[in-house]
Image (cartoon, rainbow, N blue to C red):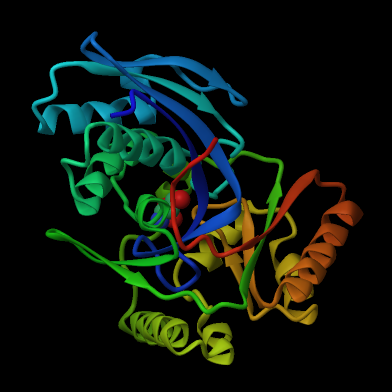
Length: 308
Ligand code: HSE
């Protein structure tokens, strides 16, 4: 059995407009790399962390705490060294913490001969999310582990459903270069919603899931509406309304906040439209003088993968 793995851990878009804390999708074009090595020494050590300024103490690092959760649940006597090469910026809204925590537990499980189920891995990785944001949400870690779209039907007990991805569906993500901490962008949310808003939101959530199953791009597009979170969080994102307007004009099916922001995502039918949407989004930030990154990506249906 191998003692070391090098892996790609995908970025993810959580919430997807109408599915706050329950819906997510994995991307192909952007993700972190990690090297995980089995050691005779007990415990978890983050031996290298490049690309972002993040803590390397095991208990302060999302990969560290997720890894410790896995170790605590099993009977393995040794430990692991973890190297993290961050390509996803922390606080960008495309699942930076989820990539690290899922990568750690997925590789550890693989190196141990798969003693844990995917659902158990989601639970271990959620400990990383608890450290990063104060809340153990699963809408980034589930798609990173399962690939494609996932729905967290229930948190207690945890129940994660994989949802198919239509072949021609592409995501465009623009990341304005500001950092929004998930913990901060959760604090500004209301804890109660009106029945009227609930009705609109779960109508759209059902519509989006149905649209993905049926490969009905129009239905996907008209379901990408958020009546609850976007009106509050969009205030934190420069040029949000303008970006959304130009993305839809350029042919996007829909557009919204990626996870807790500040990244903005849109879905398009076909790569050509997704690229055009990216160009239109860029122009807005060029005009108002905001630095940005843009990613155009096919849906990643496999999740984490071994590289090299
Ligand atoms: N569902 C989480 C939130 C995702 O919106 O706070 C964070 O990436």
